[in-house]
Length: 259
Image (cartoon, rainbow, N blue to C red; front, side, top):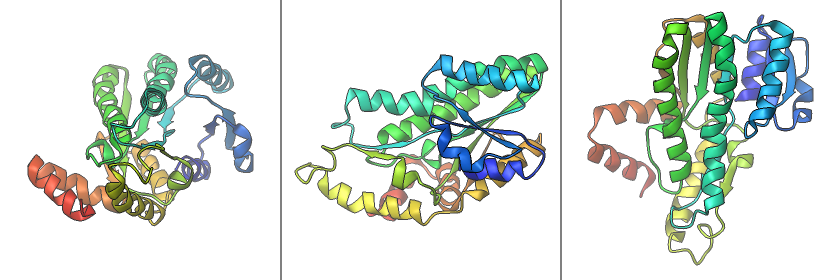
């Protein structure tokens, strides 16, 4: 999604700094309007160095897209302390760290847009994805609170809640707990039923270019809602979540995933 968004925005007049722990992976994107940037969102000093570099070049940062994230697939019973902390360190604390570094610059200019790439699973729970779900629920909470906190400084904050998209997420960004996926696991029946379905839905999901289009829409429309869904699964489940009771919604999810 980040790569597709960078390419999409660069076709306009935007100068895009594309952050990655390994900037060499983005060298094929390098052009006049796309600058690959080393960015480790687990390291506040590294983040500040990157932000200072951008600011020294332009004296402003107008838009922040918090996009980095991965999914841990594990039961709560099996998850290790390190796995829990790593999931939140990237998906939640990374979002907070980068926002913390950029907000003072936006506040100084009394202008800015922060867009958090969340997930429809930030409003909907699924088994085996408790850590990922809860991290995205946290991103939704960050979005809600920051909207109040930054309103007086003319800084807009939004979240995008994608459904399943055909990205490298299932191939590269799903981390599995070894005990949960063991044949001897008491959860083996659930894993064998649900995991292949989720992976298939991701790999056959929407095109990531749709995210770039929505980000541009948010940038251009100062009346854009606090959050928006995108992708087939998100557009199906999020409205349903609002309309049904907790019990009825849970029943629908169980039916959909044969749980």
